[in-house]
Length: 381
Image 1 (cartoon, rainbow, N blue to C red):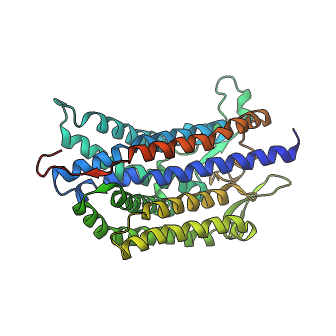
Image 2: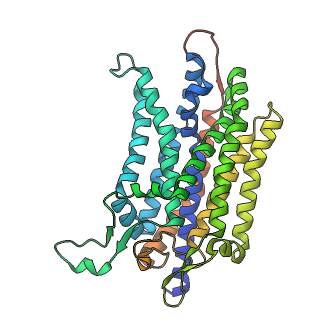
């Protein structure tokens, strides 16, 4: 396969992975809703409405997470083996959060469950808080680096044919020591709560919940903006991990991500449109409490914003998974991707993605034909 075609496929698959990442962050409104369960649900009937509303969508979030990981594994296997195999404590905790979610939705309403309804709801609360924070912190390492070493020559060592090794015994947990990783994680957490509020106002036909959701919208939005803008400001002025296109040498370049925006104006446009849509959905809903469509504007804006940030992490000769232990071990689109044949075959399969998205849209609309509505006062239903 010609080199130009191979490079195109590498960039194409990074775009698809980035798009799936954007969809995943949008769908974290399910986790955001779980974290608000006891704040918005003042009565048992209201909590049940909130759980029924998020319970219709949690599988979409989990499925997108699995698809995101699968796409990464197929297109950039060295990242998968390095991060999932090295920073396994972080990914195990994320998986545990989603397992707690699945178990909670399945068993909390079953008669005779051993742990009791409240215990399962606390599990959902844990997932609602820890899930977005951990995912956001993990994504932060795409820009701030992780501690690993890649040595492909070790494949010839029969006793231990391991390409990547983690440089610390914490295996990914050390990411919390970087304040900007945590800053992004907290921003994702508050964004999930904002999206959940907008979703509840659109999806639940209960004036009390809508009123309480509207009251929470401004403080949650301010918290999100404070952490996101702090991360964005640092991201724009930080040194980035650049790749020499000729020698593939990785080096530190001042204002690398800001330069990426300047050199890729179409990505800048995506980022600006995304941020504007997020703010539009929040602002219009806050100024008009009867407005119900804010989730679609802010949700679309979330997908576009995350897409633009991730494109800046991998495109324009940038190391998308930098190593702060050994700079030359950093992963790039070129040194971590699958073979030309694999990328080409998968590209034909990716043609089905629009049909999958259409099915998700159809299923979403079918589920929401009847918004959640409290029909009987004091029944606990």
